Length: 222
Image 1 (cartoon, rainbow, N blue to C red):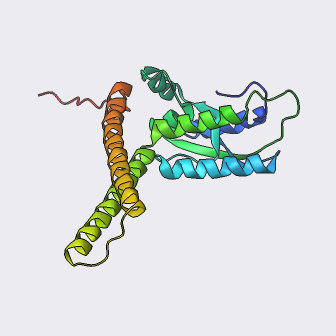
Image 2 (cartoon, rainbow, N blue to C red):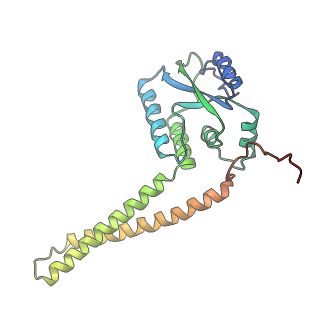
Image 3 (tube, rainbow, N blue to C red):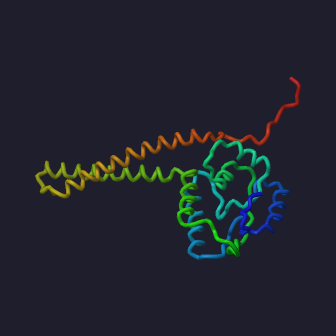
């Protein structure tokens, strides 16, 4: 059972979590369908969870924090993972098993002072996206290709204008085209290196290809 020490997530939900676990669910997590508190921050949290779900390469539950109950076999699989910089709620979704969310309203903090700030929240969001998404790298590749192609078209246009005897824009236009071309090539080269590093990152994580639920042995004599 995972529950923050400030008790902002209501402990009385544990009974409902347990009921769902008895029904056969391996992971039961709290789903914050509504938050009380700063409206601007609440909206940002909503936007992040939906953005993260769209960027992630595995289905991520919406508005689900660490507040959850997990079966021992799920915990064992999480403990086996050799990763040290873990984003737990992402790994919880990654291991699979039978999961369900319990909707609830997260009340405003009643006492104490939060240890979170803007810098920590941004770092937490970056950790989530970089752990379960390669979309930023893909966007960098697309942007690099786009800049390079636009620059090549501009260079081709200048060559055609030169051979057709048409007036050719000189000076700052040529400089802009060259900057655009070499900038696109640099971004493309960086994105290619990033793709290789992403492959290395996946190998270093050493996540299993699959998780075995059970082994079925034949009892028939040969």
